[in-house]
Image (cartoon, rainbow, N blue to C red):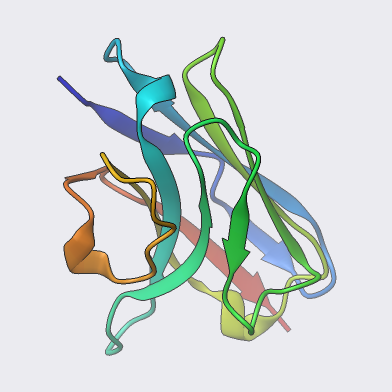
Length: 124
């Protein structure tokens, strides 16, 4: 059973940094690929970053490349998203997602499990 819970979202100013966490309360965290997606008001859910089950391979959206870093600690069943140089356009609800696949997929419908989301708001 996969149960994901995000935390860490809050109101910050442009240029600030923030770290999001996603904890899996299940027992198979190290066996599935993970990703972060985000959804802004009135927009579709979009891919942010993905990481392989072992953490060796990552993939980023062009809009966050060089500013965001995805990582995982399998001993703690936790996924992270370190966000630097935040911009107002980064304002969204951020979701973590999991799937049993070796492919770093960037499509929401390829993921089987989702958290409830955490709100990130970046003021200018």
